[in-house]
Image 1 (tube, one colour):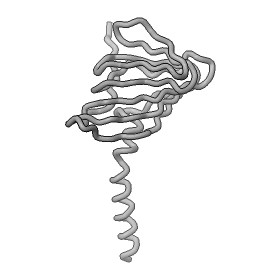
Image 2 (cartoon, rainbow, N blue to C red):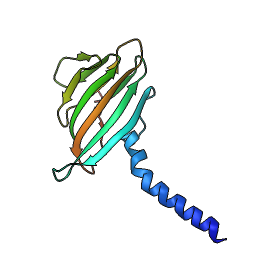
Image 3 (cartoon, one colour):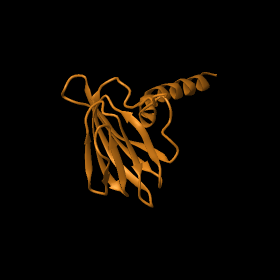
Image 4 (tube, rainbow, N blue to C red):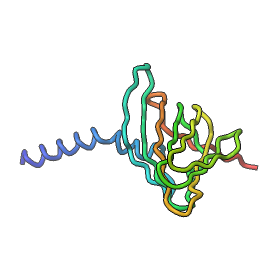
Length: 143
């Protein structure tokens, strides 16, 4: 009888330890839009108190867009595959191909869309305030 309890306790401890990593993949209260896959690469504290580095591979199916959102820190998006159009609030859209990167200032609402005919991907590196949600979807104003 003790063996099932030990196994259950071990499983609970493992699930608790891994929970933050599974939550990072979604990065928000809801899962990413259909056609978007987020894969955790690294998460680490920085030497600057209260800041952490998070890196995620974001894959886009053809024609798929990630809606307007912002982050509690800076983002550098490096395109690894395909063609992605970025729209940063207050600036004209920019289209990037593999090897191109864009810097997105903290709190800047932005969106990204795969405008190519095949799959697209970016390596997103965030330098953000520790403990805050990585992503906040922008509210659509009702008219």
